[in-house]
Length: 505
Image 1 (cartoon, rainbow, N blue to C red):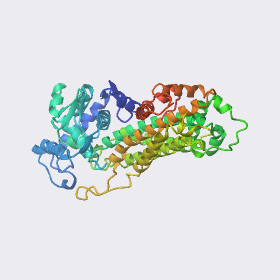
Image 2 (cartoon, rainbow, N blue to C red):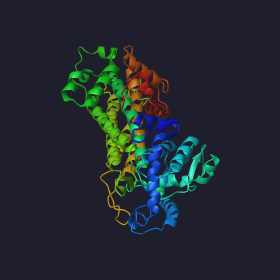
Image 3 (cartoon, one colour):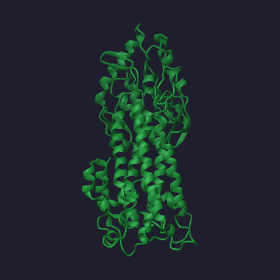
Image 4 (cartoon, rainbow, N blue to C red):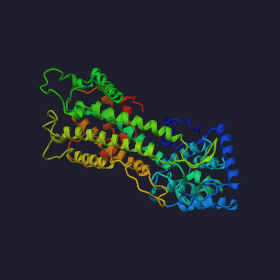
């Protein structure tokens, strides 16, 4: 059980929760502030003054005053009416992350919910009751209303949830886990569905997948460089110091370490008639390093958002105040720049794949990396697959944050589109993992054609990891399983771990 401190939880902790499924709870020290805010909301609900979301309608209906006796019905109706999500359910790991992020937001003591609500979320995480949350239907303002409504529906005994691998009605899932549905008090429904937690969870999942790919791309780029007998001169420290970009400097340093001791490289330091390599080999620090800088910037934004209070209205020192923290523009921007980094990392990697299979560019490697070209096609169509996925990612990288459409009778007249901007990242990560997996297969094949000259010790370890899941392609066979296995090496971090590379987000 991990204990979370609202306002100070690091991305490393959240990634551990996402990858392991560990339960989490709030630090009990935040309880007094939470209960004090809830008491203020309760007083407002019983008062004569209209307070948005406490004793009024919502959105365009904010001018409608609700009687104190109807506040519980108001919150229940809010949840049921907002369960309008469609599409495939969000995966359980990311749904649980969304619940954790909601805990962090409520734990700041500005949302006005009772501790009872927080305790139920904690208990659901501990017991493995995961709401079924359709993945489509949010425009990223006023918060992720539809997805979070489906999360909350399970908490009140409605909707659906997963429990021990079975999809069932929410009330049944809670009962099976020995839990009791909560009856929502004033503002609690609004506090639960107003917020950016769906978008932020999806963006974080995309960020962590993108970082695995960024790390793996350093390994595959080094393998490809040795496969085509490329030069490591462009990695020299002075070149990158003169430009000064931190990501570029870090990428060049990592690549120098990975390639150190390569006898393939040493074999052509003298007498090589080639003056310089193509950009896809020579400019990896500049291109991938720029992507690294984008991912690190996005990480800072998303760590702030993960700890933020993003519902409305908020309980502040001045009273219960309506604002706009639910607008997910920061998340939308972060998702867009993650998408750019994914697309460009794949674009330059795909060119390295194309380089290796082309005998006019690969420095004497056989066509399509097969020892018997003509009778065999080798990795010809594997390269075509990478081209298809590269192009797909380029289209997916089109910005979502620049799109907006008015909703809710023009009350919510500018929206972020953060939800699908973040959600597309999972597909882009999968595509990039395949591109890098194919690059790893091609580079392994190419390096083996350089025998008896070996690559560096660290890259030999990467080759061993590749060959553990994909034998050398000596004659044509179905390569789809090899591609899937190589992509898995990228996604699960095995390829990077084999080299001992330490390259932190």
